Image 1 (tube, one colour):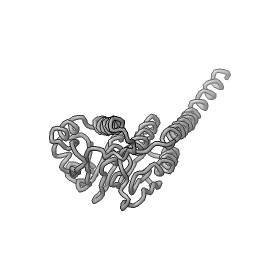
Image 2: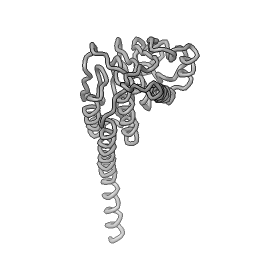
Image 3: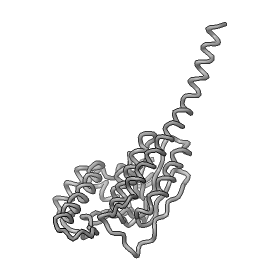
Length: 240
């Protein structure tokens, strides 16, 4: 009887463990979010300008996870952090999907958002996605590259270019170092997803100027690049 009771208690304890682990993991994520926001928002000016004509970013919860639409700015960070944390907490199928539709914006903000996605991936896989007729350009590309998997419709448009500096330093040497650091962070984020694509873009001189270079997701996959890991279901090569 005693051994049976001990076994029952062990089973009950084991059944409570996943919920407790989930709560602890979510709490850790929220702490990481708070720390990243403190570091990111405190007086940082990004090296990539925000197009004043671009519509402001909107971050919303979706059935699959979350969606970001619009220009990425430092002001996007708090909302993105909170919605990402909520998406992870509310997850029911073992993954979170981040849908993107953005012409880019502030690179520093995008890099910090990338760090938040990577922090979330400690708890749950995050798939980044760009839907049909939508785009992920400039700074948005580093956020797309953060996904553990990266899906897109064949018509989804990506854009790459050298980061544009908006630094106000009067010292040319300081401005030059800032630009080099920005480009290094941008390329490292892209290369984390697909170093071969970055080497190919470098060879074409894409990062030698701020002139945009566009590519459709279907062409990226057809070229053998892993920047897009799969096409959306129902499309050629997209799987089921």
